Image 1 (tube, helix red, strand yellow):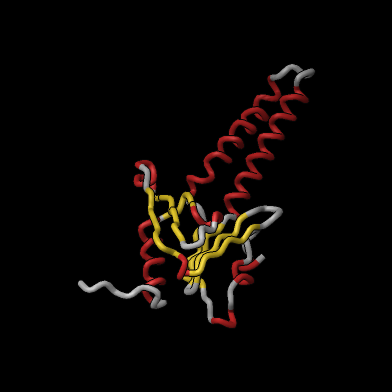
Image 2: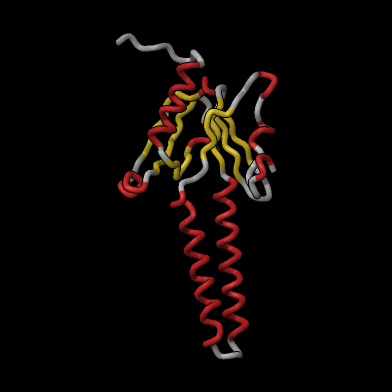
Length: 172
């Protein structure tokens, strides 16, 4: 597990070092993406706290449900934590998955268009969603949700594409 981060994917092992590929930005999800996991966890914790007030004959059921909810909360949070979107000087890629890992990659030359969607709540809290249109639609990279500082991230991708010489400057 690279960089000493618990359960974080090892981004470095996916880089084309012999081609001088470097990470420009590693995007983790905005904290809002953890809210569903937090909701499961809160209900599970509430059931654990309620346990002393429950009839002894039903205590095992309440404990079982609470344990299940806390397990689901942990799994969902871990899934969000290991889902990474990476921008390099050559391509963009996404790594996700807890036990089975998935890697989707797209060279910068394939990016035709990027749409940044910012719902009202996202504008208020500082997140948005990316929708990539590409020459060969890589499904794992089409929708990148809950991206913090989306305008800044979009500009980073545009700069990388521009610096790579893939797009020529428009006459102004």
